[in-house]
Length: 357
Image (cartoon, rainbow, N blue to C red; front, side, top):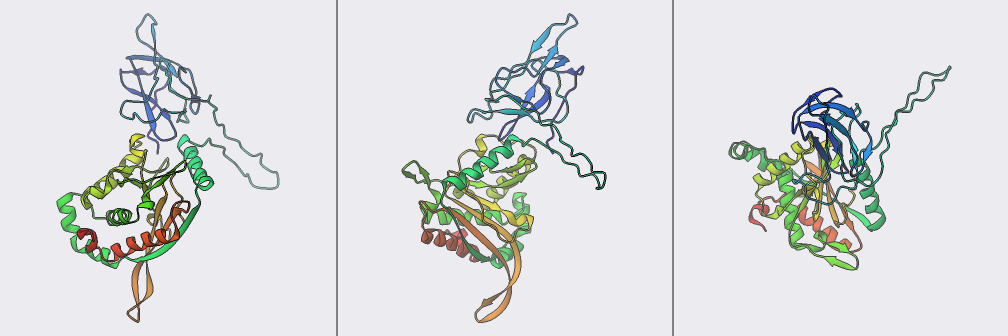
């Protein structure tokens, strides 16, 4: 749910009160009233694409009919990331007539209108709807296609016996939650294991820039989060220096703010490696796609009890398939397989994560 706030023509507005939201390819930008008054004109309908200098609405500020223009020429200071290329009025209802509002954008706007198929006299109605893709969904599509077109992407698989981690969580969950105010999840274990493995297999944490390989001596881990607007990947900076509790709190915060549209552009820029957990939706096995210019992404999946051979005996264990997609241009199979094996070994003996062995 977008939680977009709207005012209608004729409504009384207060200074700094939210009028509408403009959707870019990554975030929602709030447009506020610069003055108190009455909305007297809506200049652009909902769904329109706008460019710098475009007037969105007008506000009448006094009984004499004086009107004030509302102009927004840049993003809020809280997100001083790259320039916004295009903004879309992210609403399906008519937009309030506020003073002229403009945002930085590049292309003129188009408004999507629903298309309905004509019913056949012999068949039941077969309706169709045409809805314009959000800027975020367009950007996701562009980046996924970019990864396929530029990287020599390959995926290697393994499986992890999650019993040791599950036993550790069961033993300390209550105490951990009481001490830190957050549950001890699986993602903190995987984040720790990934950072530990990246320190050994540095190419997996590297990226290609032209003809150069850029090695990163820091570990900024992207956490793929599914929101109601689509998949976003906020970055956990210096994840190797964070405690289990700090990681769990950061992940919970990302998930909360992704759905409330509060993540900033700055929080989603950069990153040296990504973890994507499809297991929360029940995925048993998949091949994750790289997040350019990163060279590796780890896909986690559903934990499922399966029979395995252990010391010559068939036993039932909670197993998880894991997948590492990597850029074969700079990472050879040996490094990729060894990296994934290092993650597996750390999770199957979690004491090594605490001792950093």
